[in-house]
Image (cartoon, rainbow, N blue to C red; front, side, top):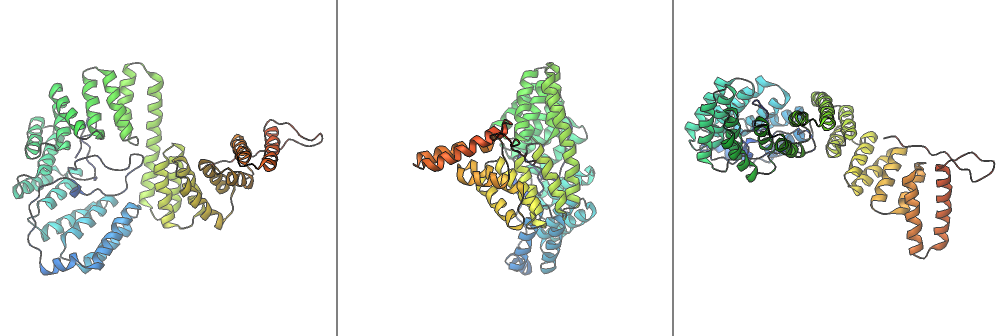
Length: 463
């Protein structure tokens, strides 16, 4: 569980997980399971004969796998359908209700999510983890009294459950009960001295109490245990800001932005520190990035609400490409292809994104598939650039010509191809390539090679 910025941020990303997770260059669209945390939960009661049989039921397991895959692909409705079918086959299995509750929460169907979490608890009333999961869900929706009751019940069932103690601390922090929050985070650390989230949270609540020295001790220990913990780096920056140590604050915020570049909160903090040092150009760049991310949030909501429409994922992917977030764009184009297989626009777009992250063979494969359906300038052009990346200059030249693309890059391809031919002893063919190169360069410079001819056209490829 994390504390982000100057206020408590509660998301449905998990309960007390031990480290920051998720793609660093994209918007996570899948549910993070609280079981990913290192928890010491009380063993569940011995399963009934029906439950034991369900665990090995191939039909149930196949449906669960289908649901997980659907969530990753941004198709939560499909996940709900699969889990509902699994529940039909095994109605006494608590984990199925818990999983469906996660997906309902992702969809924003809070009433259904709460019902499913409660059904899971009814099936396994002594499962401390299920209490903790429902408590976190309730806490994230502002129902702190109900959440606290679940966390307290979880710690009664399992007194050593550090995540539940941590979550109780978060409730206290949300209520600005800083002293109680610090005590509860300390209790979590008593049960697990390497609990990184609790270190981060206690460091933050100490910062709120202006205990800067001990706050930095906790936060520095957190990043020592997990150097990729963006929230802890952010909180280190906040402590330095409070001490007017702006250079140190910027260094900490730099780490946060590097680790989680798609979160505008870090950028806002770094911008504030840059302004304090009158670094106005850098501050303006952060402000522009914040605006870009705000627009991305709108596209994300539209894509999630209508995940069955390929055009929504394609629109979001294009925007990501414009922001040079090529890895995230690949994910969105893949989601578009999952709902619209063979979509030429998605194949060409994904190929271009793959090209920009150095996945040349995969880019070529997407272009190949696209060109089978429809020959486009874009597919030939991207494939040519991918061949260049693989130093296959002959194929690159062929595709550049097919794309009718003549620019500095194709000139480089011709030169490289000619050099390669000469190295292989193919001097005559190399001379032909060099002659074609001269015509291209003359055309680029607007020079006619024939007295009565017009300058050669060199169309630009728009992506």
